[in-house]
Image (spheres, helix red, strand yellow):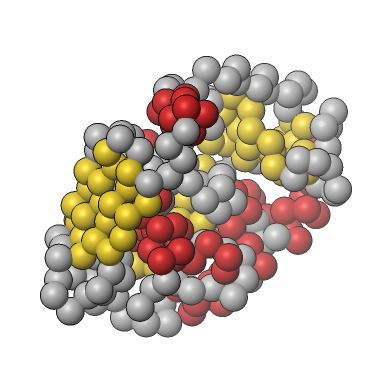
Length: 260
Protein backbone atom coordinates (compact mmCIF):
# COMPACT_ATOMS: atom_id res chain seq x y z
CA UNK A 1 0.00 0.00 0.00
CA UNK A 2 1.18 3.52 -0.77
CA UNK A 3 2.30 5.54 2.24
CA UNK A 4 0.30 8.55 3.43
CA UNK A 5 2.90 10.84 1.88
CA UNK A 6 2.65 9.07 -1.47
CA UNK A 7 -1.16 9.15 -1.38
CA UNK A 8 -1.13 12.85 -0.53
CA UNK A 9 1.22 13.65 -3.41
CA UNK A 10 -1.08 11.85 -5.85
CA UNK A 11 -4.19 13.59 -4.47
CA UNK A 12 -2.48 16.99 -4.64
CA UNK A 13 -1.49 16.38 -8.27
CA UNK A 14 -5.11 17.01 -9.30
CA UNK A 15 -4.64 20.68 -8.34
CA UNK A 16 -8.26 21.16 -7.30
CA UNK A 17 -9.65 24.56 -6.47
CA UNK A 18 -11.64 25.01 -3.26
CA UNK A 19 -15.03 23.34 -3.69
CA UNK A 20 -13.89 21.08 -6.53
CA UNK A 21 -14.36 17.31 -6.59
CA UNK A 22 -12.75 14.65 -8.82
CA UNK A 23 -14.09 11.13 -9.38
CA UNK A 24 -12.32 8.56 -11.55
CA UNK A 25 -10.28 5.36 -11.68
CA UNK A 26 -8.18 4.62 -8.61
CA UNK A 27 -4.48 5.26 -9.35
CA UNK A 28 -3.51 2.81 -6.60
CA UNK A 29 -5.63 -0.31 -7.17
CA UNK A 30 -6.96 0.35 -10.68
CA UNK A 31 -10.63 0.28 -9.59
CA UNK A 32 -12.87 1.84 -12.24
CA UNK A 33 -14.53 5.06 -11.08
CA UNK A 34 -13.90 4.22 -7.41
CA UNK A 35 -11.47 7.01 -6.49
CA UNK A 36 -12.53 10.44 -5.27
CA UNK A 37 -10.62 13.57 -4.32
CA UNK A 38 -12.30 16.72 -3.01
CA UNK A 39 -11.14 20.04 -1.58
CA UNK A 40 -13.44 21.97 0.74
CA UNK A 41 -12.46 24.92 2.94
CA UNK A 42 -8.80 24.02 2.53
CA UNK A 43 -9.30 20.39 3.60
CA UNK A 44 -8.22 17.79 1.05
CA UNK A 45 -9.94 14.38 1.28
CA UNK A 46 -9.28 11.36 -0.90
CA UNK A 47 -10.22 7.70 -0.91
CA UNK A 48 -11.16 4.61 -2.87
CA UNK A 49 -14.62 3.07 -2.49
CA UNK A 50 -13.41 -0.40 -3.46
CA UNK A 51 -13.63 -2.61 -0.37
CA UNK A 52 -10.27 -4.27 -0.98
CA UNK A 53 -8.42 -0.95 -1.39
CA UNK A 54 -7.40 0.72 1.91
CA UNK A 55 -6.37 4.01 0.28
CA UNK A 56 -7.80 7.14 1.88
CA UNK A 57 -6.85 10.15 3.92
CA UNK A 58 -7.36 13.76 4.96
CA UNK A 59 -5.02 16.72 4.84
CA UNK A 60 -6.13 20.02 6.37
CA UNK A 61 -3.28 22.02 4.88
CA UNK A 62 -2.28 25.40 6.29
CA UNK A 63 -5.39 26.93 7.88
CA UNK A 64 -3.66 30.13 9.01
CA UNK A 65 -4.62 33.44 7.42
CA UNK A 66 -1.35 33.33 5.51
CA UNK A 67 -2.11 29.83 4.21
CA UNK A 68 -5.66 30.75 3.16
CA UNK A 69 -4.45 33.86 1.32
CA UNK A 70 -1.77 31.80 -0.43
CA UNK A 71 -4.40 29.35 -1.72
CA UNK A 72 -6.64 32.17 -2.94
CA UNK A 73 -3.70 33.71 -4.76
CA UNK A 74 -2.79 30.35 -6.33
CA UNK A 75 -6.33 30.01 -7.73
CA UNK A 76 -6.23 33.39 -9.46
CA UNK A 77 -5.20 33.54 -13.13
CA UNK A 78 -1.51 34.30 -13.48
CA UNK A 79 -0.74 37.94 -14.18
CA UNK A 80 2.99 37.42 -14.55
CA UNK A 81 4.18 39.28 -17.66
CA UNK A 82 5.31 37.07 -20.53
CA UNK A 83 9.05 37.08 -21.13
CA UNK A 84 9.81 38.69 -24.51
CA UNK A 85 11.12 36.40 -27.23
CA UNK A 86 14.85 37.07 -27.70
CA UNK A 87 16.16 38.57 -30.91
CA UNK A 88 17.63 37.64 -33.20
CA UNK A 89 16.22 34.14 -33.49
CA UNK A 90 18.00 32.20 -36.21
CA UNK A 91 17.70 28.68 -37.61
CA UNK A 92 19.62 26.13 -35.56
CA UNK A 93 21.21 24.89 -38.80
CA UNK A 94 23.10 28.20 -39.08
CA UNK A 95 25.07 27.45 -35.92
CA UNK A 96 27.24 24.29 -35.72
CA UNK A 97 27.29 24.52 -31.92
CA UNK A 98 23.48 24.35 -31.80
CA UNK A 99 23.45 21.38 -34.18
CA UNK A 100 26.03 19.58 -32.05
CA UNK A 101 23.89 20.27 -28.99
CA UNK A 102 20.84 18.69 -30.65
CA UNK A 103 22.89 15.66 -31.69
CA UNK A 104 24.13 15.19 -28.11
CA UNK A 105 20.55 14.74 -26.90
CA UNK A 106 19.21 12.64 -29.79
CA UNK A 107 17.16 15.57 -31.14
CA UNK A 108 18.99 16.33 -34.40
CA UNK A 109 17.06 13.82 -36.50
CA UNK A 110 13.72 15.36 -35.51
CA UNK A 111 14.94 18.80 -36.55
CA UNK A 112 16.50 17.69 -39.82
CA UNK A 113 13.35 15.71 -40.68
CA UNK A 114 11.21 18.84 -40.32
CA UNK A 115 9.26 17.47 -37.36
CA UNK A 116 10.02 20.52 -35.22
CA UNK A 117 11.27 24.07 -35.84
CA UNK A 118 14.30 24.66 -33.62
CA UNK A 119 15.92 28.09 -33.34
CA UNK A 120 19.03 29.51 -31.72
CA UNK A 121 19.27 32.75 -29.71
CA UNK A 122 22.94 33.82 -29.92
CA UNK A 123 22.53 36.65 -27.41
CA UNK A 124 21.57 34.11 -24.72
CA UNK A 125 23.33 31.02 -26.12
CA UNK A 126 20.08 29.07 -25.94
CA UNK A 127 18.49 26.51 -28.24
CA UNK A 128 14.75 27.26 -28.51
CA UNK A 129 11.82 24.92 -29.14
CA UNK A 130 8.30 26.10 -30.13
CA UNK A 131 5.47 25.85 -27.62
CA UNK A 132 2.14 26.18 -29.38
CA UNK A 133 2.11 29.09 -31.82
CA UNK A 134 2.97 31.91 -29.41
CA UNK A 135 5.80 30.68 -27.23
CA UNK A 136 9.27 29.20 -27.10
CA UNK A 137 11.20 27.36 -24.42
CA UNK A 138 14.96 27.72 -24.47
CA UNK A 139 17.63 25.37 -23.16
CA UNK A 140 20.98 26.85 -22.19
CA UNK A 141 23.66 25.23 -24.33
CA UNK A 142 26.29 25.14 -21.58
CA UNK A 143 26.06 26.09 -17.91
CA UNK A 144 23.60 28.96 -18.46
CA UNK A 145 21.13 29.44 -15.61
CA UNK A 146 18.29 28.87 -15.45
CA UNK A 147 18.79 25.72 -17.51
CA UNK A 148 15.36 26.16 -19.15
CA UNK A 149 13.66 29.51 -19.82
CA UNK A 150 10.20 30.25 -21.22
CA UNK A 151 9.40 33.05 -23.66
CA UNK A 152 5.96 34.22 -24.72
CA UNK A 153 2.86 32.08 -24.07
CA UNK A 154 4.04 28.60 -23.01
CA UNK A 155 0.70 27.30 -21.72
CA UNK A 156 0.51 24.61 -24.42
CA UNK A 157 2.47 21.42 -24.91
CA UNK A 158 5.66 21.43 -26.94
CA UNK A 159 5.03 18.63 -29.44
CA UNK A 160 7.17 16.76 -31.94
CA UNK A 161 6.00 14.02 -34.30
CA UNK A 162 2.79 12.91 -35.96
CA UNK A 163 1.91 9.59 -34.32
CA UNK A 164 -1.43 8.74 -32.73
CA UNK A 165 0.20 7.80 -29.40
CA UNK A 166 1.20 10.72 -27.19
CA UNK A 167 4.30 10.17 -25.06
CA UNK A 168 4.22 12.71 -22.23
CA UNK A 169 7.71 13.79 -21.17
CA UNK A 170 9.17 16.63 -19.11
CA UNK A 171 11.35 18.48 -21.62
CA UNK A 172 11.49 19.37 -25.30
CA UNK A 173 14.67 17.40 -26.01
CA UNK A 174 12.96 14.21 -24.86
CA UNK A 175 9.93 15.09 -27.02
CA UNK A 176 12.26 15.34 -30.04
CA UNK A 177 13.94 12.02 -29.24
CA UNK A 178 10.50 10.37 -29.13
CA UNK A 179 8.96 12.21 -32.10
CA UNK A 180 11.14 10.56 -34.74
CA UNK A 181 9.38 7.24 -34.08
CA UNK A 182 6.43 7.24 -36.54
CA UNK A 183 3.77 5.91 -34.18
CA UNK A 184 4.54 8.45 -31.44
CA UNK A 185 4.22 12.17 -30.80
CA UNK A 186 6.50 13.53 -28.09
CA UNK A 187 4.57 15.91 -25.82
CA UNK A 188 6.62 17.99 -23.41
CA UNK A 189 5.03 19.47 -20.28
CA UNK A 190 8.04 21.76 -19.84
CA UNK A 191 8.08 20.51 -16.26
CA UNK A 192 5.96 18.07 -14.25
CA UNK A 193 2.65 19.96 -13.99
CA UNK A 194 -0.27 18.67 -16.08
CA UNK A 195 -2.74 21.50 -16.74
CA UNK A 196 -6.27 21.51 -18.12
CA UNK A 197 -4.89 22.96 -21.37
CA UNK A 198 -2.55 19.98 -21.66
CA UNK A 199 -5.40 17.55 -20.95
CA UNK A 200 -7.51 19.07 -23.73
CA UNK A 201 -4.63 18.65 -26.19
CA UNK A 202 -3.93 15.06 -25.12
CA UNK A 203 -7.57 14.06 -25.67
CA UNK A 204 -6.88 14.21 -29.41
CA UNK A 205 -4.65 11.11 -29.21
CA UNK A 206 -5.78 7.50 -29.34
CA UNK A 207 -3.31 6.45 -26.66
CA UNK A 208 -1.21 8.18 -24.02
CA UNK A 209 1.99 6.99 -22.32
CA UNK A 210 3.30 8.96 -19.34
CA UNK A 211 7.10 8.71 -19.35
CA UNK A 212 8.55 11.17 -16.84
CA UNK A 213 11.95 11.25 -15.18
CA UNK A 214 12.59 8.62 -12.47
CA UNK A 215 12.04 11.08 -9.61
CA UNK A 216 8.52 11.95 -10.79
CA UNK A 217 6.84 8.54 -10.63
CA UNK A 218 4.23 9.59 -8.07
CA UNK A 219 3.26 12.60 -10.19
CA UNK A 220 3.04 10.33 -13.22
CA UNK A 221 0.65 8.08 -11.30
CA UNK A 222 -1.59 11.06 -10.59
CA UNK A 223 -1.53 12.04 -14.27
CA UNK A 224 -2.69 8.58 -15.30
CA UNK A 225 -5.69 8.95 -13.01
CA UNK A 226 -6.54 12.44 -14.31
CA UNK A 227 -6.40 11.30 -17.93
CA UNK A 228 -8.35 8.06 -17.43
CA UNK A 229 -11.50 7.93 -19.51
CA UNK A 230 -10.16 10.19 -22.25
CA UNK A 231 -7.88 7.65 -23.97
CA UNK A 232 -5.96 4.49 -23.19
CA UNK A 233 -3.48 5.76 -20.58
CA UNK A 234 -0.46 4.01 -19.06
CA UNK A 235 2.86 5.00 -17.52
CA UNK A 236 6.40 3.70 -17.83
CA UNK A 237 8.91 3.48 -14.99
CA UNK A 238 12.10 4.86 -16.50
CA UNK A 239 15.68 4.62 -15.30
CA UNK A 240 16.71 7.77 -17.17
CA UNK A 241 15.42 10.60 -19.34
CA UNK A 242 14.38 9.56 -22.87
CA UNK A 243 16.63 12.15 -24.52
CA UNK A 244 19.62 9.98 -23.66
CA UNK A 245 18.44 7.08 -25.84
CA UNK A 246 18.14 6.28 -29.54
CA UNK A 247 14.80 5.73 -31.23
CA UNK A 248 15.05 1.92 -31.20
CA UNK A 249 15.90 1.88 -27.51
CA UNK A 250 13.02 4.27 -26.72
CA UNK A 251 10.57 2.05 -28.60
CA UNK A 252 11.68 -0.96 -26.56
CA UNK A 253 11.40 1.01 -23.32
CA UNK A 254 7.88 2.21 -24.10
CA UNK A 255 6.54 -1.10 -25.38
CA UNK A 256 8.09 -3.49 -22.88
CA UNK A 257 4.64 -4.44 -21.61
CA UNK A 258 1.23 -4.87 -23.20
CA UNK A 259 -1.33 -2.28 -22.14
CA UNK A 260 -4.44 -3.70 -20.58
